[in-house]
Length: 448
Image 1: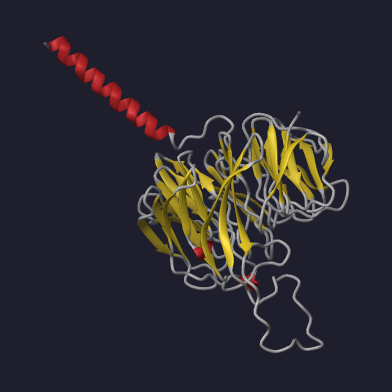
Image 2 (image 1 turned 45 degrees about the vertical axis):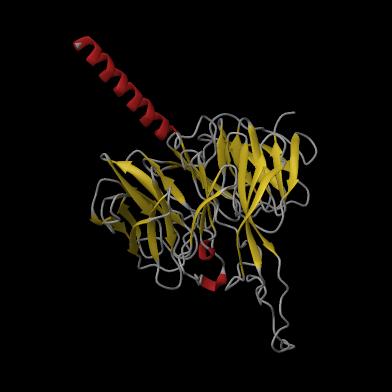
């Protein structure tokens, strides 16, 4: 009887352990999956290799036309690719009065009035590029426009945990689908965000454990929410003293507890994962914060590159206001990125500026291995760099995707030209292939 009891207890423990492991494995990417626009570890690095050389005809496994306009980056789980787009379905009303003869259009802002769009989520077959399903999350007339060149109504990149896909359209709401395209839940926050200079929305959702985090920083009553990712139920909400901000949060674990770090103009702030309570804050970044934070060991790296640019390495483990304290281990004011997020790998922090200068820092000390090195010709960048197998991939606005050697010395390994293509979305890497989203096409590049 005793031995039988021990057997059944052991069996029960084993079954419980397997159940817990199975539940946990849903949220753990397999080797090579690209579930988030900054890669599996949110540092810009891929698992495995990626191609070195290609053209628009050589080593292109497939290309698929994507309807509408969207600058969200693709995410990948297994043999499925997910992305979002906004498709114009309405017709603009006639202007109330003719424009003045001397009126000059603002090239930064998409012209109005706005028309009705359908906000779509797409799933593609990774091997063939075939669109497997396309779902319309909602239809709406946007309340304001976006940056005429770099913006879109679908710039918030989706995220997946391998069971569900989460597509965030900002003012148009949050939508959760299973991987077959079935809508699981949706949530409208009743917010119409007014962004600085109508540059448009573009902050993607972040998942960790059973939580989904969304930040609404705009020219109004800004806030951040934590949702139950399985139901959409709001767990906590915190008000934020911030204005327009495009830097997505980063979840880190330190000292056995999770916290959520958010870069912003007034202060970088870190909130308790469970309660939303403020743990620490640190001033110093400039306006229009866009780059995503990255983390190595006890350091978090945050950056801004517009007015009053700043790159800071902030030490974890402190509480309260860290502004001006030794918690800021090192900082840099030159050569910072305005838009592209950095890549962090092997104690090296790689920074790409919008006008095509590259820097590589010792992540712990801030000493540059090289600093503000210009690429071979004039380039512009909005896409963030990504890394794989010792190579750094830079997708430009100017037809070229450059490949640099990662390490202490600057070296261009390849320049891959895609005529007439402009890249704003960040590439994704999976299984030795790189996926490039241009203005209206998605490419799969790999050795044939």
